[in-house]
Image (cartoon, rainbow, N blue to C red; front, side, top):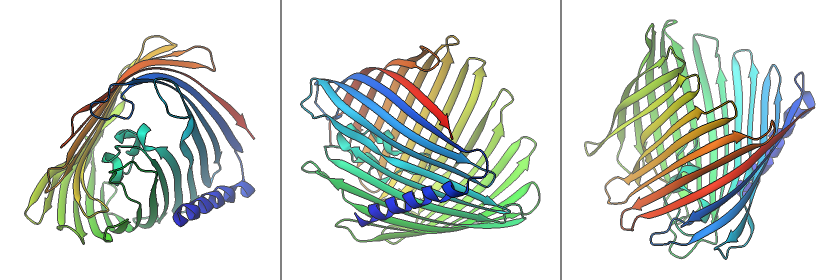
Length: 417
């Protein structure tokens, strides 16, 4: 737990730094409250479980933001009070509690950014999608069965230099710690410490052509397993054309506990006339002539009309777990929004995750679908009503399904200092 304490100290210290040197803009504070009541079957997503529970969740969040000509700071504190109302013997407790820090400082030709996170979750309330953020797919995303508590602490530092020059470079450092307590019998989850560092470069051959490179090293140590590490090298080229951006990337990975890998992708990106953007990269990952996998990414955002919008994200990658296994993960999300009136909107969301451990039969698929209607009751209060379904299918286990009906009330209060 010493890593968690160190991360907390750094987060608190970094958050305090800009407060004494505000230039302009002041500080904006926001308090958010969301009250959600749901009736959900098979809350723990266990095969064969059919019981229905009614749960009240009160979500609280407090955010401080500061913007000046040189720096941006955001510190968010959040927690949720879960209270079973019917069909459950669980006690009232706090869940999803933690803090998120983002800080960026800009100087002529340079930019330094800090990201810190501390989060505490109850495993029984988690879905795999909750652990996939914009940049990371965490090792234990697909091993969430049973009960217990999960604490995640992360700290990352990025520094970029010579951003307005023909040649630029940067450094990044990161550390993360996962801690578990009170796990149910048979759980395979273990404490993990990980570290990573990278050096990146950028060279503009011309205003239209850019070369990039990245050299990285990562190390992780799972409780009860040998320490694993991976060295990596990535090279890319992008060309700006009237039709959009064309690009290609070549990546090498040298793990110490599995076969070396080479990945190659080609891609493009283009702004859409009606508003939006489409971007894709597709290629293959090859491991010493053995396993070959299709990898890539697809992002699509389009304003279909004045009242509707669609977004699609799909990501497929090969990664090394802290226990030395190699995993092919596919994550996806589809979101559709339709304004029914000035005050009412319809929202449809689909989340998808597939994990395939290479050279084994271990595979898991999970998806979630939700349909909701949002209505602005007053200028301050918003009502949301909907239904959802989550399904998990894991090799060696029966399929598990959870259905829910929910409604929520939400409001935010803003203040400027």
